[in-house]
Length: 124
Image 1 (tube, rainbow, N blue to C red):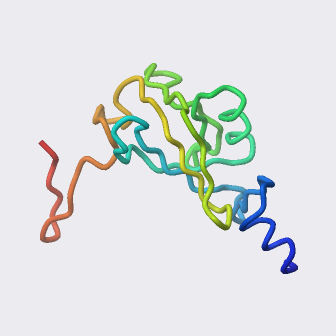
Image 2 (image 1 turned 90 degrees about the vertical axis):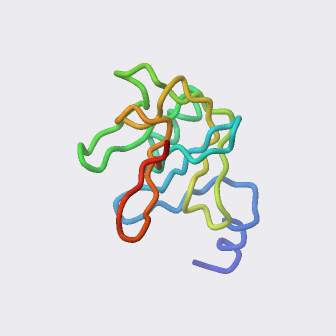
């Protein structure tokens, strides 16, 4: 990549996500109100496009090899307040308003356990 293209990606105003070799980019989701970390997932170009167009978070499931809209079956959608991209455009930050629990286990966040002395401790 030429220095001009690198600088444009890192400091310019053109959205040019750097997808990995599988066509995916990491997406970190936080609660827009509290700032709490809710989940980490992946997006492909189509998921990012649909998220921008609809205002509802869409992701790409690596295990199912398919696109999915968060909350499609549970109703616990993530209404996107803001999308941000990091400096080299290889990670997306989704600020969202969750319509319910984010984790498929029913927890508010997928990060509901702490690692303590090699064990997992549940938040109360």
